[in-house]
Length: 373
Image: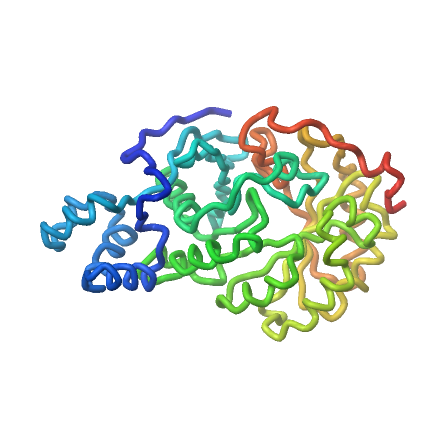
C-alpha cells in the first residue's frame, strides 16, 4: 500500500460563492439568463469545464473580457480538495477529499479489466445508522451539494493512471442518496449530459436502503440503475441491521418495487446482501430470498461483510458464502458472490468512515438475540 499526495490548482471557496459545477447545463443557462447574461455563454463555460478540463476563466478565450472579469468576482469552479490517495494491494484507490468547511468525504476508484468504477458519496456521514456499516456509526453531518458530488468524479479523473478511463459511477459511498435526491439528480444530469461528463445512464447506479417515497422519482430521472441494500430476509433481523426498516418494512419495500413498471429484466433491481456470520447467512435465509424477490426483476449481489472497528460483526467462512450462493442460484435467482476490493485500506463496502478511529465498536446483533438462526 502506498500514499500519494496531489497538488491542488484552486482551493475550495466558501459556500455562498456560486459554483459552476453545482449546475447542470440547463440550470447554468437559467442562472446566466437571470443575471442578464446570454445563455450562450453558459454553454461556452460548460464546454470549457467538461470538454476541455479548464477551470480558469482567464483561459476561456472565446468569452468577452468583461464577462470573464464579472464572473471571476462571484463564481468558482471546484468544491473539493484531494488530500490523499491511498492504494490497495488489489489496485483499488481511496480518495480522501476535503470540503470547503473542513469536512471530509471519501470516494473509491475500482479498476477492473473491462471497466473502471468510481464509488461516490452523497452525504457527510449518514443518518441511517446501519449496524454493520462504519459510515453509519459516524452519524449525519450534512448533505453534499451537486457540485461536491460531481467534483468527486473530477478528482477521480485527475488520479487516473495512463490507459485508465472512468466508465461507471455508483452512488454507494457515504450517505443515503435518496435522502439527498435533488443534489443527486442535478449531479446525474451533469454526468449524463453529452456536453458534460458524457456517461451513459446505464453506467450509473444509485443505491438506497429503501426510502420508498423517493424510489419512483429516482427512476423517473432516466434509465439509470437502482440498487437496494437488502441484507436480511425477515423484518426482525433487518430492523437491527437497517433501522430504516422500522419505517419501511420488507413487505412495503418489496410491494413498492413490484409495482414499478419501469423495472424489467433488462433494467433489474440490483439487490445488495451483506453476509454476516451468524446473523443472516443461514441456508434458511438463502431459501427465503427467492420468495422475497419473487415478481421483481432482479440480480442479487452477495457481499461478505467487511470488518471494521465500528462493529464486531464478522464475515462467514468461504464455505458458508459459497453454500449460500449455491442455494439461491438453485432457486433460479441471478446471483453474484462479490470479491472484496480495497479492504486493506478500509475502502471496501461498509468501511468508509472518513478517518480512522472515528467510530466506536457497536453491539453485535447475534448477541442481541435477534439472529436469524
